[in-house]
Amino acid sequence: MFKNKTVGWLKCSSRERIVIFVHLIKMCNFAEKYAAMAKYDFDTVIERRGTGAMKYDSLKELFGREDVTPLWIADMEFAAAPEITQAMLRRFSHPVYGYACTPQTYWQSIRSWLKRRHNFNVEQSELAFVPGVVRAIAYALNFFTCAGDKVVIQPPVYHPFRLVTEGNGRVVVENPLVPAADGKSYEMDLAGLERIFATESPKLMILCNPHNPAGIQWSRETLAAVGTLARKYGVVVVSDEIHGDLMLYGRAHVPFLDAGEDAAAVGIAFGAPSKTFNIPGLVSSWAVVRNPELREPFYKWLEVNEFSAPNFTATTGTEAAYTCGEEWLNELIPYIEGNIEAVETFFAEKCPAIKVMRPQASFLIWLDCRELGLTQPELENMFINKAGLALNSGTMFGTQGEGFMRLNIAQPRASLLKALASLEGIACPAEAVNA
Image (tube, rainbow, N blue to C red):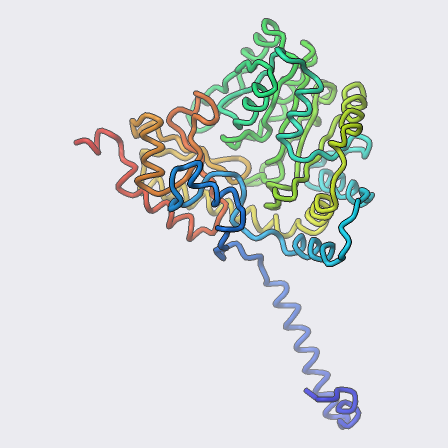
């Protein structure tokens, strides 16, 4: 308003000063109202090709072509919360990237988050840093089992459970999930699990809670039953809870270790801010172990091998996410719910032969394509080469995934629906196509 604000203010009359003051108050009120109305942006399309993003820059290698829309690997097309970006930039603005210690505030941010979001009370002594959940599962396998030992998984399930187990010379024992009566979800076969525990004598079980790819949050009663059986038969349960913050439609996450004394006695839980806040590239995860007989030797082994020493990017990003990112997450979840509903409407109206399993958690949808009457290679060909869409094939998650595909819907809604529109007239039952 003035070239020299101080001189200009002094030269103003009392009346002019009052007018300016009132104007400033109005500007402040407008700013407050604008801030109250402001929302995070989940609709802007962000170009990621050429940034080393696996989702895009691996398309040719994994799907045979680059001109497909990637709807596969579980990261989001949304910008990370600006509070996280700002925290990272502040740290990177310091020109020395030396060895870092772990600040106390890092541990407190995890504990406060788990208490606030899930009513899960965790002591700092029960926590450890791990550089990624899959790596952490591998650490647990190598520490608690030996080559040739049996490990239980429950397919269709996240494929690294099998890959890490077999790759480390252990033997996978399957306890497949049972389709629910309504065909819209799965249930755990607890009787089958006990038979396996009793007859196969596995040393470890890998649990997915919430379950990937079906998006199921297991009930407290089911988790408690798993804990009771595992304790009875001396099985360590590793629970992958990386999707636990992304609960949908008001459903609560139930941490395995919070499902009763037996679960706490046998359980090792792994979680992370990575899926929640779209920061998997920072490689920051955490472990919780209640039972000191499991925790103390395992954490000691992690420590002496320097597996539990985080770098400053991990601690900075995690602390910012858990202390400043909650409002972003609270806006993200209803956006994801809206995407799910849009996908349900699309398939019901345009491709009714494909059934949508509504997830209870996260941004992955398990598509039941069996009514199309296609073999799995034919199904994959339809999505990739006819529709130009790159999804995860259902058989990646086990033979029980035959006839299914996994769809990632965490992207701007307009882009998602534009991509799915390419299925119109293509995703029809085989007999209709061949008529």
